[in-house]
Length: 435
Ligand code: NDP
Image (cartoon, rainbow, N blue to C red; front, side, top):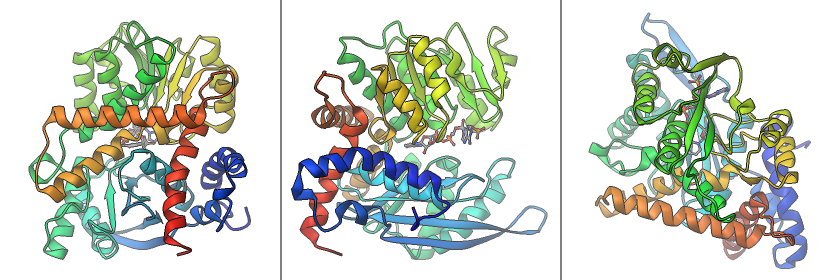
């Protein structure tokens, strides 16, 4: 695309949506007006800024800061901040574009955005992370607000970073508002928000399996990643009777044939969230498990695969191996972890496949519930939030079935999610005129 050179991830995300939405537009001429889809591919606003900060040795460091305000047709921009050395404009635009459709699917009034920095939190002291977050927010604070743009966490941005950024926003604005989600419970966070993406992914996979009269009971589950999403997907899949046998990080994956039960998961949470260690330390603690350096977990025999690490981490060859090993359901916990070629392999083999914009929407949905609670100045109980999350995931599944069921009964969740997400945003954009 001449308009977006050097943005392969963004073009990949747009192509995937266009392939399913253009045929829908052709069948429904009402949507073939005012360049709706083309307008959706151009961000309403892109912010790029300098983030200077001082490291512990007194040296000045400079990172790039970004916020993509993609679409506000149905609500304030909403989407996470990613701190990772790989962050660039293409990756954030792909994430922001996906976010528009995802947020639309949640049934809540949220537009789409995404942001972040090429800052690498690995190996940095708490004080360095704090100074970076304060500098990042000093600029970002001019552009966001509880009714304008409400960022959240993503890769490299968890409770610690959200806390530092919230503190800086409050200090600059002299305002206590729900301007960020994923906050700590003591200052406006919602119960179940940390769990929501992983739990939601498993609830969604549960609905997929139910279309075949099946469930997680007795299933072998392969999960990639070992961060926020992977951890809570492991917890919920295990609770529902599945046996999770893999976890990974950027150094490789571990395979535990006996299953990663609650005690072992507690060890992983401590290792990753507190000690900020590497996944291979798992096999030092549990010597029956094996570590595969530099590899991804898709060669393991499993019934259900939940990719929960990062984009493009499951390719066509790996998809063929999963199919040969009898996988029946793949539900993305990460954003765009499955390459387009791999999706084709899975769909041709009639494997149930859910794209992240549907199956990982539980995180942002619960962020939406956090915004509501902040506005109400009231907290719902754990059970109330979990019940709402379950209801939203079931509604998203239903929308995918409505728009994605094929003549032979196979549910194309990619088409279902894209079309259902598109319709709501398109209706709002049409009603609001060409702005
Ligand atoms: P975390 O930072 O908590 O964990 C990320 C995990 O993925 C880590 O295990 C990390 O390994 C691994 N990882 C990151 N980058 C790479 C890479 N380039 N190659 C291999 N492994 C990598 O992030 P989250 O769990 O929050 O996010 C995971 C995915 O889920 C992302 O795609 C995110 O966009 C998506 N997502 C997250 C939501 C949320 O609520 N948190 C909501 C919706 C989607 P290492 O420790 O080695 O870096």
